[in-house]
Amino acid sequence: LASKHPDTGISALAALNLALLGDGLYLRCNPASTETPHLHLRLNGSGMVQTRLLIELEPGSRLNLLLEHQGPPGALANVVTQICGGTGSQLELLRIQDLPADGVLTETTHIELGQDATLSATSLDFGGQLVRQDLSVALAGPGATAAIHGAFLVGGHQHVDNHTTVDHRAPDTSSREIFHGLATGHGRGVFNGRIVVQPGAVRTVSALNSRNLLLANTAEIDTKPELEIFTDDVRCSHGATTGQLDANALFYLRSRGLGPDEARQALITAFLHATLALVVPENLGSRVAALLQERLTALDGVAD
Image 1 (cartoon, one colour):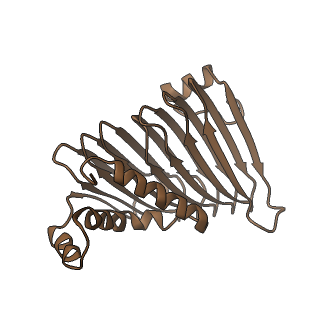
Image 2: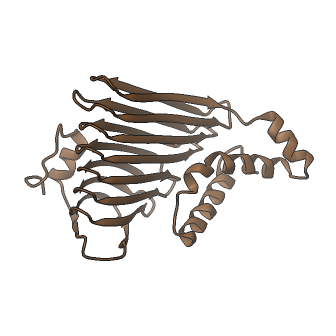
């Protein structure tokens, strides 16, 4: 796998994964099927797990992929995923991380898109004690498009890192990225989003936004959007906001008969709705909504 798709600027964690590789999956998707195939991969290992996934989408192929991280108490996983999207391919990627409260996950994902290839990626972090996701997307062909959404919830003494890089390498590419973070208790969330527009990548359209909500004075969210442009004729923007629940909105819901915890949870769910609405099919969306409700109930300061 390394010789077929060598890691560019390989990180220490990716090198560790390659050196101690214990399990892997190679998936090749062709355009023969008239219907988009749906694949659900559940990564669930005990002890220290080193897993590598290599996925190739042939030109014109389509794939809906659900990648779910679970595990027993004390789980420790270091996962590397490499995805190559051929000309005109379409990938819908949903990543759900729901590790136990003491779980540890480090994840390195690299996606490369060819000409007119399309990516829709959604990332959800609900569990884990220490979690880090490094996601890089290379728009390598003209007309490539990427839409990236993410949401993370941290409470107790959880620490969740999300580091993303969107690299525009070809002209007429576009990307849109929105991450929502929510923290309470002594939880800490980190989001570092980076957009790079390489020389020659003219007519690039890109937007990056980080929106965060703090539910306790002891919680912390560090956000850092970055924008690097090395060419002209582009439209790019980035921004970040961090705040607390609106007291007026809480008062309005309380005046309509909701209790204090119900009002808070209603506003939190609305805050995350833009990301959760992307979860399809309906039965999976219902399961994610139930999981969110369970986590919100368990988070410090949200419910008794």
